[in-house]
Each structure stands twice: as structure tokens, then as C-alpha cells.
Amino acid sequence: MTIDVIIPSYKPGPKFRELLKRLEKQELPVRKIIVINTEKKYWKEEFEACPILQVHHISKDEFDHGAARNLGASYSQADIFLCMTDDAMPADGKLTKALVKAFENQGPDGEQVIEVYGRQLAERDCRMAEAYTRQFNYPDKSQLKTIKDLPRLGIKTFFASNVCCAYRRKEFLELGGFINRTIFNEDMIFAAKALKAGYAVQYEARAKVIHSHNYSCFQQFHRNFDLGVSQADHPEVFQGVPSVGEGVRLVKSTAVFLAGKKKFHLIPGLIINSGFKFLGYQLGKRYEKLPFWLVKRFAMNKNYWKMQEEK
Image (cartoon, rainbow, N blue to C red; front, side, top):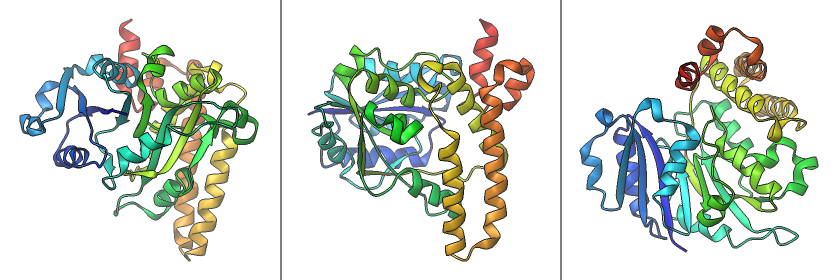
């Protein structure tokens, strides 16, 4: 099976150059790296030394999480395309091979795997609590999910991440691709659509990328505000699906982990950070009740609201 990689980029730097090099050295060769770059003025021509690179430039006003990746998919002719972000790094040369191999799996009733997302490992400079969050969300054991797992897994049934997520191109297009206009969560929205259509989604722990952030409390607030907005805008996916309980379980588990490491002084920071996440999420879910100027201030993806305002 052939595989292309699709990467939306914005102000790519030295880390992006390393990403291209690692993709070139995969055991299962990448056919083409398709970059959808926002704002040509920030692009460095030196990146084009990569022989399998294909770059397409868009303006900041044209960028959308779903639309940019749909544009990338339109340039692919491979059996599988892999969505990545420009700050994720393959942990080894086996990334594409592990992802493609996972498409051979089937659900308990023969459901075909349409989407495979990889494991995210923390950067070396990642804070301890955030590193544990990576372990919590991306454990070392793979998992195959179908719609029948919804009562057991809740919102985690739909969980997937375009930081590193591969798709069967033909079936992806048949289902209509990503939603073209969304503030966030285009990967989970597609996963929900695919699962409801009778496909399976695979988490593949052997497909590893290095990716983490040391977000401040306010950055967590803005990010989770966008998360809440995306869920409010798509009740057909998220309504009636429990999600808060998973967040509470993460906080409790992280606190136990920190206590076990005798890092008791980090627990108050964990609680404060989690409070900012919860507040942002709850306000995002109720954004329609807020003044528009406040919505724009709370959002991480401010360009989304600029475009809404111009409509």
C-alpha cells in the first residue's frame, strides 16, 4: 500500500527540516509529502531540497483545520494518507510501516479500519504532569474501536488526533472527508462519522511520534474553549456522550502519579491548570450565550471568528 503525508504548516523552522528528513528515511517509503503552507512569506525555499516534497500556499484567511487537510487529500493519489502537524516528529523509522500494517485489522463483526492514529510521546523538556497526560491518552497498548464501544468508552470512542493519523483515502473521500469549516476537532468529528457508518478506528501504539506542549493556564483555557465550541457546534456527534468524567479521571490519575513520585508540590499547580481547562471547556460549550467580543477574546483560533464576522 502506498502512503502520502499531509502537513499543514505555519512559520515552519529548523524542527520542520528535521521532520522532512525523518519522513524521507521511513522503512515503508513515503510517496509524497504534501504541505499546505499558510502564508508564503514565512516559507523557506531550503525545505524544497526534499525530493518528495510538494508545497501549496494559502493565505491565513483561507486556513481551516478541516479544509486545509481536505485540500491536501485532494493532491494525494496514494492508498493511505497520513495527517501530521508541523511540530510532530517521527520517533523512529517504523512510523509509516506500523500505521499501514494496522489497516489489516478488523473489528469483531468484520468492520474495516478506516483511520489509524499513533502514539504521542512527550518531549524531553515536557513538564511531568503533561508527560503523564501523554501516557494517559496514548498508552503503550493498541486499541481497536467500533461504535459498539460507545457505552463503555464514552467520548474516548471518537478520540483520534491529526497530530499523527492515517486514513484510507478512497473510503475517506466516499464519506465526504473532513468537515470544511470547524474551529477544532476535525479528526474526532470524522472518526464519529466513520464509526457510525460501520467502520473501525485503530489506536496503534507502535506508531510513535514525539509531540507535546508546555501550555500555560491561560493557553489551556483558550484551547479548551475551542474544544467546547467544537462540541457545541456538532451536537450530532457529541450530544449525550459523556466527556467530563474522562477529564476528572485524568486529573485524579495524574495526582496519584505525582504523589507516587513524591512530587506533592506539583499537585496544586495540576488542580489550578485543570480548573482553567474546565472553565474554558464549559464556557466554550455555552459560547452562543456570550457576547461576541468575549468569544473572540476567549478563543485560541481567533481567525475562525474573524471569518465568521466577515460572513
